[in-house]
Length: 337
Ligand SMILES: [Fe+2]
Image 1: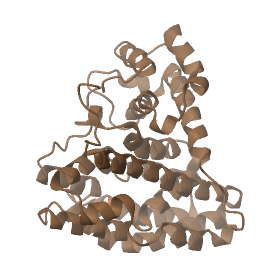
Image 2 (image 1 turned 180 degrees about the horizontal axis):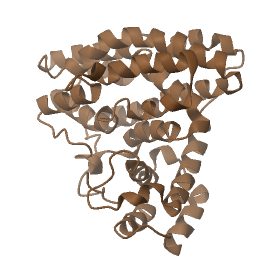
Image 3 (image 1 turned 45 degrees about the vertical axis):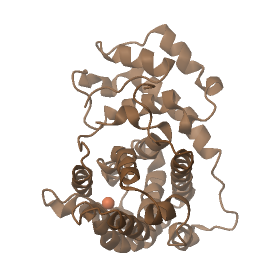
Image 4 (image 1 turned 90 degrees about the vertical axis):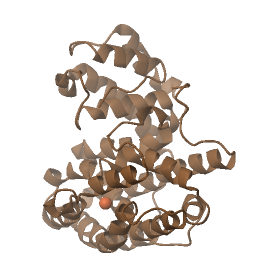
């Protein structure tokens, strides 16, 4: 994977620095980073913040071609990452309201209610009934950043929890990784989906075209997954991803069939229709129910993680619907990037 193109002063200075040996950051970057709380209006949709954060996290996945791998644990880069995370977390939490009457024991049922099937609306309804093949391709590009890394951020939670929550998490993750069968992990099914749509399935191939609101789905779960203090949040993120997923993927599969998508292209969606009908029960009752029982002091993190995930997903959906309603592309124009 190559380094992406910068999108503003922070990423411009940071990416130039990453070409060199790991070490201190230039004072210009330190000043920009220190000023982030004042200069960032909404980090969730801030192109410069999100591409910088995505790149910081990239070192914890597979890294970048020609870039020194020691940056992963370089204190100066972790300082930059922390500052980016601070404004991102600030703007994520600004949208999260803890339900007043919710109790720890009520979390599994609340999650099922919050994320479960409802009447398709907004982007989901549009994909099901109106989207063109070109729009399905655009959607596949947006979601490639998390789809081709599916399950990876949640795997970081495995060593961080014990008991029932861990067992349920392992059961979900085993399916996500295709039960150990080569070619069957959901990330690989996503690559097949992209190839069938004549898209490049290499991770990051379209990074410069993918806007901040789409990146934030992936950066949110990377932020939660990489920090033990937020283990409840990453489980809440997984629960909000699994619950209702069967319903969502059925509508995507039917929508893609409507525009002539092959059975092979729809495999990723169809796999989720079956798998996530089971996963949502495991996620709500066994994983989250087990977590609130075993980690009672951290139950609110589950709720925050789930609500933050739905909010970010809503932001993503609205940004795409608005772009398409204006008869434009929902992707970033490469010239602008
Ligand atoms: Fe999956």
